Image (cartoon, rainbow, N blue to C red):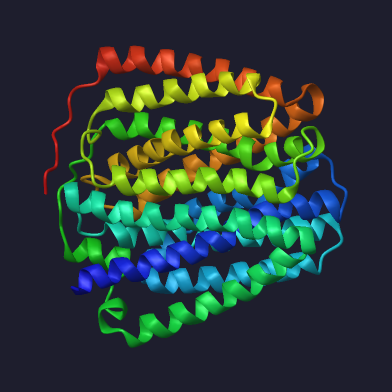
Amino acid sequence: MTHDNKQLLFLSLISFFAQMIISMVNLALVYYLNDALNYSASTIAITVSSFSISYVVFCLLLEKPTSHLCPRQNIYFALVGMGISILLFLKSYSYIFILSTLVFYGGFMALLWPHMETWYSRGREGKHLNKAISYFNFSWSAGIAFSSIICGLLTEIDVKLPLIISVVSFILLSLIVFILTNKVPYLKAVESEKKYIINNKNNDNSTPLRYFAWIAVFLAYFFYGMLSNIFPLYAKNILLINETRIGFLLWSRGVVSCLAFYYLGKMSFWHFKGNYIILSQLVLAVLCLVTILCNDYYSFFIIFILFGLIFSLMYLQSIFHGVSGAVNRTRRMIIHEVLLTCGLVFGSIISGYIFEKFGFKSVMKNFGIFMFAIVFVEYIVFSISLKKPSKIEK
């Protein structure tokens, strides 16, 4: 196995475990705030969204300062900081202090994903870039899939337990990263983004399709925000589905996304094809409206499976077209992360408010109509103004 493949394997394992811990925290927070602190749906949505808002802000604020650090250093500090933040959260009872710990949690997370994605994509284009991205997407989506089941089982034992285990896991993973990246030469030798750009003076060959793909990933995460933060409350309190079965639904979406990432990573039919970007959004809009007809566990199982497929394509389109041909890849990854996080935040907050006032089906109906309007405008702009981008084959 070459050093390049070993590096991809190392990054994939770290991505898998980091995302598994983060996803367990995200879901556990909803249950903890609802069961232990008795917060309302809208308050939970706002509270959980606080670390996402913080993530966006710190992604933007820390772009230049963190460009001087190696990716491995950013990842290590991120894991340590997130672990300490959740530990402080568990010790908090004041709402202001709870929000403060989650703000720090999101701030430290801003050191993780943009630099992880930059490390994956560095020096790669075309098929080689697609291979690296598929490694990344397969690993973090697998982490989400396993976390849902684990969190559901642990929550039924004690609502605090998944958060306690997450703290321990963050610290252990940070130690593994620190030891390996300081002992393994080809991991230790990875340069900071600033130094890499100076040493490799490349021309910018970006594709304008990235703008459409970025809209798509925003919408995908808007829908994902509704499912991950509001659906568990709807399923538990209205449909009377227990936490383990809810966890299985979330797990099924993660598994399907994981498999879709793997197979789409081997295909190139969607590369630099704007029609697939528009079509994926149209399918999601239809899926959203179909959800109105679902009233039982099995119908939602089908919805989660279908969403897992379309979500994977929309995410891949964003990260691939966003970074293809780019010089400053950390900046592009930050844009990608900011947009998907904004989608998650707005999806959580808006759906939380509508759910509390009008119900879950009203949430789905309004978002479906909104998506159709977005797709219509996009199609007009795409048809009139977009020129074919040049493909990057190498």
